[in-house]
Length: 326
Figure 1 (cartoon, helix red, strand yellow):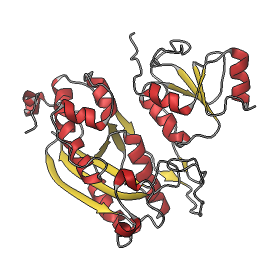
Figure 2: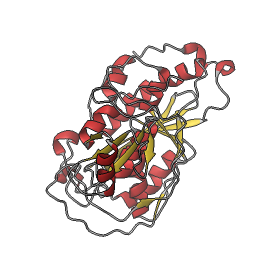
Figure 3: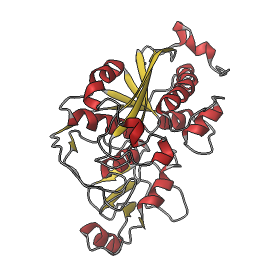
């Protein structure tokens, strides 16, 4: 049985009035991580203002293409052949999300996948805010060895039964989110809510899968309609090899990435980094998979002596960004 370590916060008098009135804890499984990948299953646990479960919902989705890494999610082409298309479940999915904060583990990924699916059917997902449980665990200072869902679940004594099954992952997250939410309420922690803006100007056109495999970069035609918020932290200086990133560092990206650029930039923003669109002497770090290319950012990085890491190394660094110490 899940131990509720913050039951005092559930009383009406202790609950912050500014907190949202409802949450949709979401998990989606996908054919991959890139821009043209598709959702193949989705689950939603609807929670009330205090994190209590109201109901849950699950569906598989026919992606109209190969299912990608079956060894991860376990859904084969045969299993998905008779599943509904996304357009067939879009309205019911929307009803589960409407007027609620979308909660997910690495929420930017789930939101981007959902937003793209709705853009494909020329609709908008009714989501205006999202909350990432990774960001919330950092706000709470939870003593986790890493930011995997299994570590968050273990911290709160939640037993995971079927990892990478959307329904079980959503259940696990809902059970871990409830005590996290109550801990935040008890300490009057401001929830790390971020605005969600729909994707626009979608043109669906076939893009062949390349040999890059799962998560390979494949350009498509969507682009986000939003302005990235300003970084609230001052720049602490350049990244030093072997040391963690620090909130406020200016990070620039150059060249193709296996994970979509927007997703990487959002992850950096949510970690408290400043995403720079150009490279200057103030840039703390350049992320590129091709440090020998002749792009203007790579050339300037050589001139200024800016540290350079590849995408994989940057992903590791994002797991443990040092908080701004004032």
